[in-house]
Every structure is written in C-alpha cells, then in structure tokens.
Length: 67
Image 1 (cartoon, rainbow, N blue to C red):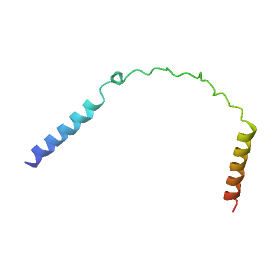
Image 2 (image 1 turned 120 degrees about the vertical axis):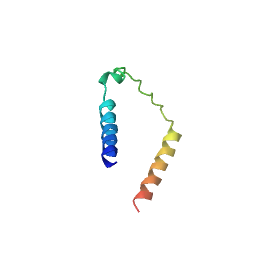
Image 3 (image 1 turned 180 degrees about the vertical axis):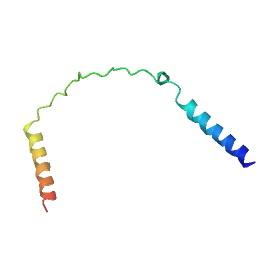
Image 4 (image 1 turned 90 degrees about the vertical axis):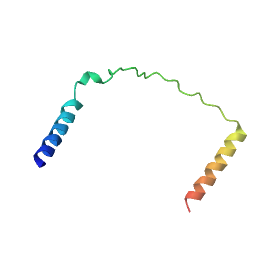
C-alpha cells in the first residue's frame, strides 16, 4: 500500500513540475510604450499679501519645529 501511495505521490509531483514550465511564450510580449515627455506645471506669481501670508506660515512652522 505504501509503495502505491509513494508512486502516486511521485507521479503527481513530477506531473506538476513538468507541466508548470511549458514555454516562455505564454507570457505577454514586453512592449516599451513609456514616454519621457511631460509638461511642467506653470507657477503662479503671488501677490504681496499672499507672500506675507506664506512667510508668516513659514515662520510659524520654523518656530514650532525648533522648540
């Protein structure tokens, strides 16, 4: 009985091993469709009041982390 189980086990393992790697053509072909063209965002010029607000927040941040 053990001999039959070992034979079946070896058959299953060998079948799964040899059937797992049939051909490399089963994979989809690699296509290089990547592009390196991109558009940089345009910056917005801040008004004097907006620059002051940004500077105030920047100063507040710096004082908070330098404690």
